[in-house]
Image (cartoon, rainbow, N blue to C red; front, side, top):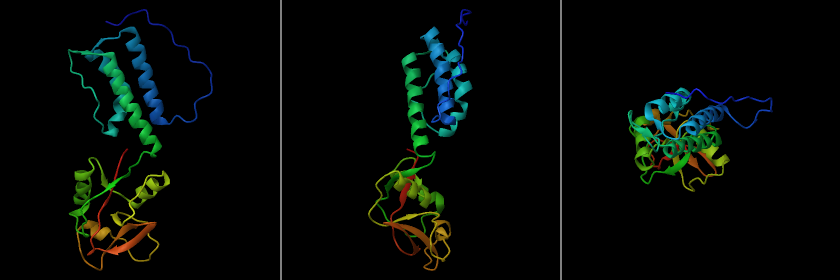
Length: 210
C-alpha cells in the first residue's frame, strides 16, 4: 500500500533548459518519478514499480533496445537494477540526440557484392550479419557520419538513395535485384559519391543507430 505522508513538490518559475529535447524531457520525468518512489521505498514489489515506470516509458519502445535488467511479477525490483536500466536508457537517448535520431556509419562489409544483393532486405541482412543491428547506409547517413567526424572507408562502397549530380537515373540496381549493366547504383567513392553499373562488385557501407 502506498504511504499517505508524501511530501509536496513546488515548481518554481525558473527558465527552461534550452538544450533538452522531447526525449530528454520524457526521460527527466521518468527519472523524477522513479527517484521519488525509490526514495520512499528503496525496494519495491515489481508490479508496483513497473506500473509507475510504464506510464512514462511506453513511448520509448520505439528505441527497440534490450534493458540490462528484466523483472518478473511477484519478485522485488532492486533500486540499483532499476537505476541501471534508467542509465542505459539515458545513454541511448543521448546517442540518438547526438546523431539527430538517425543511423551512422558502422562499418564496411568484408565481402563485395554486385547489384543483386537479394533486394533491400538482402543487403540489410548482409550488413546485420557483420554489424548487428546495421542496415545498408543511405547517402544521407554517410554524409551525416562525415559531418560528425566519423572515419569513412578510403575505398569504394555501395550505398542506397544518393543525391547524385549526374543526370543518369539512380535506381539502386532496381532495389538491389539486378546485375544489368544499364542499371545503376551509387558508390561512396572518396571524397564523394559516383554512379556505378550494377554488374560491378563493391562492398556495402553499413549504418546503425549508435
